Image 1 (cartoon, rainbow, N blue to C red):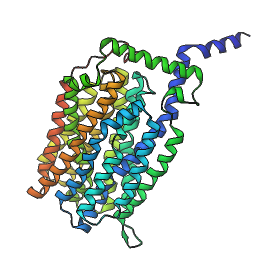
Image 2: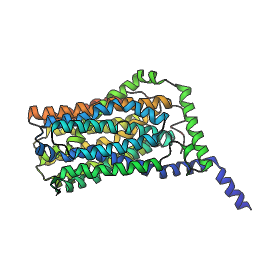
Image 3: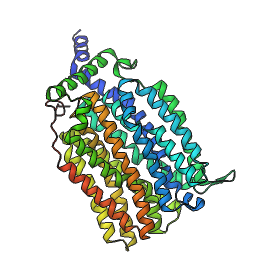
Image 4: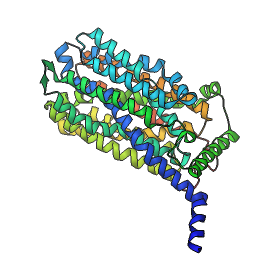
Length: 443
């Protein structure tokens, strides 16, 4: 009798219900979100591995390749903010399904390009297809995860970046060596890696639920607890400030975040799309050896993101956890420019700098969620990400230009190191006003 009463009491205890709800949501959503972003990231950066052969086969200069990479970000930026708002106000499930199926089809078609114009068009269309995927996923996570868990949830999303490299690097090394049906391996790289996006996109439509109130797999008591908790956080933020979308866009702190993110992505996206070429030219190694070496920054990045996201949530601190990885990555690239002629040391600095960077991502995206209302935060994600992604156009074109102009990689490494240090310094100068009782609520 006493046992039954005790059990019933435990089930109705809010702390117990909350713990079960948080665990159930994490186990249900995070593995699938992780899978989605792995597929996304592989499809986005497979061109960097394809370029180990593609430019030589098609006669592209570094500037042509860099501009082609940048074309992706023109349309990506144009549709970023509307897409994030669509996720907030319409349906994440339907919108992400549309995104994945369309980008999978465009990726497959990229395997059949023959000219620079066709390459530019393929990248342009891929940007349009994929735009708003990332901010849409961030917005989606805010519908399910409380502030105390949000940095870890975003860390799980971003951990797919290095995890995708762990999968994509050896896969690319193998596919670059095949020659099926008279098609070069780099063409098969696009064709075969585009198919999973279409398949997973279809699964997304049936697996995802937009909000806790629409999830049949969530027990009623856990659903009620989660809805109440999320609503209380929104109310706590609104007591401090509840800016409109336009007010958020004019906030000096948001503008500083935008500039920092633009600078960070100028370096990061340049590194991502050029690092196979960098390693190849520094080492002279085979394509298989190059793709194997690139497992190192992926492992460093995976560990760094998870540990940094966990420690940031534990200490309820965002600014230093965002700035330090950027400054560390900038230092590695600065050292790389000073020691360019010692090949082993240069490779080490390059791989370390590329790996250290990843750790800043989840804590950076936790910052806007603690400053803004839900609708303003959704649009702000799109604004920050869309303008930041222009760094993909600027960074890749500038690296291609500098490589062609100087016939050396030193200027490109100096550019990457400089923008990382500047981005980290901007984050350090930021002052964040956190809603009382939200981030520091005990676990």
